[in-house]
Image (cartoon, rainbow, N blue to C red; front, side, top):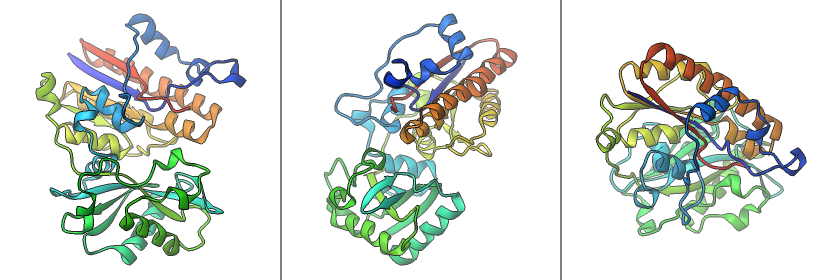
Length: 338
């Protein structure tokens, strides 16, 4: 038996008054999702516990059957693992966004979506000025990067803290930076220093540090659920790769998987089917609907959902039917991104 989970990140939504009270998912043409709903079993699932903030980190742990209240230590260490950043016991890893600030207010959580090359240049500038003495920045994909404070550095001041760093930048668009700065002095100093380092750039002109934590310890997925042959995760987002690696799943690298609207949808399906010839489980994640939701672009979110339906769900069903006799498919969003 082959098991497949397909996640359309942020695909769920609230009814949109100007679209007749429909959600983006209801507006989108989704013949393949319609087929799955008709031929399969539909239900409701709560992926975000009441006491935790909504996010793909919390939701994906829930989807995989790991209680976030027990295992979650922060988004930063999960993304660091996804990037293969070495984390030793006691190290703190933070998500490090490149953001845009205009007139002292957050204007864009993604810093204008810099290219990987542009982002690497900015991260290199941060390391040149601020790196060393247990502080190291690591470039990721576009605006998504990582800061590690080594255990021998000042990170002992965070002992016992559950929420380390600032608020998620996509939740504070329009807020004044000075009012949202992290409580911890060392983090505030880094954020404010980045403003000077980046100068008067119009797009990525500040780094924002959030969701810091230490490396989590979680039982292996295969042993926990008896999946023979192991499994894999496929995503253009380091967070999902990191969660996979943390539970013993292989994070398959797909050329052209960008975590954005231009991602290699067909390549993701191709690599997923190839993985299933050796393993019995695969989780395939698509970020595009979530990005559109954060941008507030209804039509773009509808298009992202339609691409997910046609290029991922449809192609995956076709490939499974051609390659395997027995399989089960779960399709769902991880959370709402209105």
